Length: 256
Image (cartoon, one colour):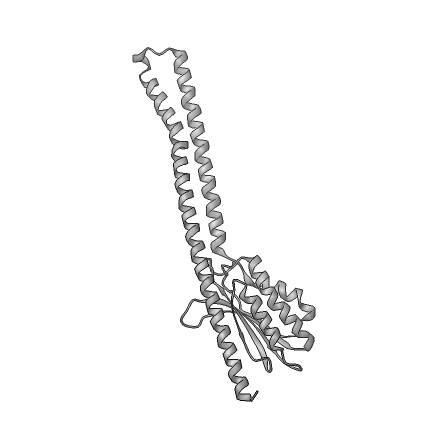
């Protein structure tokens, strides 16, 4: 095969893979939209059932209080005995206590929901996750530089998912260290104009002795395509490879 034909074949494979990746991303987006729609319908159904039950739970003691209070108001006219008045008062007090208990339960449930929503909005601090991975792979990493910006934003990706998805990338980097590829690590906030802002983790491997095998890069790409994190792999393996990961930012802002 001539050099020109080889380059054309390489471009064709890259183009085919890019089309496959785009189709896969589209399917993921459609699946996410369908899942979000189902979750919304379930939430609306649960809300309707909750309000229906709430109406019954509150109205029952309220009706008892109103009814027995009305009887007490007309007790003299109706000739109600003292014993009956005491009985009616007991009903009013027990219904009032029941009503207070149910209101406390509602407020407690609302408080737990608000706390969960706040935690979801706050998001995950990626810095401890990155430091954990660096520490776990420290014995295999030929680090030439680590740059972590200060006051980085949080990401909406859960800590467990963030760690699991990045583990394959660090395993790839560790494997390349056997060939003494130097690696630099950079974690920063993408402030470039246009598009959704994100937290970026960039791992750059520089070939110092042996080129990075293309088959290893393809295997890593297949693993990352199965993850939920946006990524980009650049480089031909001769000079090195750059791995970039984009994490959506959470609404909670920067960690305190």
